[in-house]
Amino acid sequence: MSDEVVTFFKALADANRLKIVGLLAQQPYSVEELAALLDLKPSTVSHHLAKLAQIGLVSARTESYYNVYQLDEKALQSKSQNLFSQENLAASVVDVNANAYDQKVIADYSRKDGSLKTIPAQRKKLEAVLRYVVQAFEINKKYSEKKVNEILSRYHEDTASLRRELVGYGLMKREGGGGDYWRE
Image 1: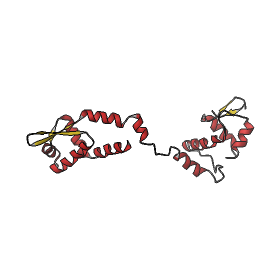
Image 2 (image 1 turned 180 degrees about the horizontal axis):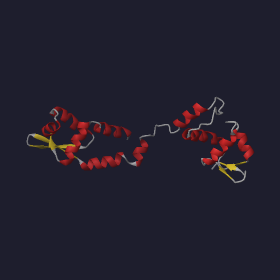
Image 3 (image 1 turned 45 degrees about the vertical axis):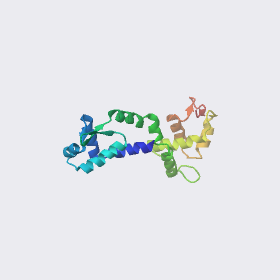
Image 4 (image 1 turned 180 degrees about the vertical axis):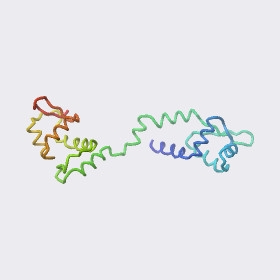
């Protein structure tokens, strides 16, 4: 479906084609009329109309010696709804690695052994690092603060900051007063 989206936008990615769509939205025109209105050669207008017809936005009917072009408003609405549907938009990013940013941040901030060179100050980078660190904890397993510190020390010596940030960002839960920690 993403090919259809690209083709649609390529067809509309020209100022003269957009003008033609705008003019045809008001009324039907012949190639010669459009050429005069836009100060273009008829062959150029025909080329633009062919691109718009290819994506189903314009159609022609014969009147006397002329082809008269009109905008297919129903096709425009239908195409817009279809192209911008939730599932088509989601399908257009299927081949994108959703973890690419996290992977880059982890590569920048970690050593070969997996420990952190430093804890990032920037919020987005810190979140990526925390998502990496929290994977060391099993879901729904309770850990004592001592055990949490032991695990976090593999990543960085400032275990208190990591512990506080994991809880602060909601990646781990904590019982009050130095109680247990867990990942949901």
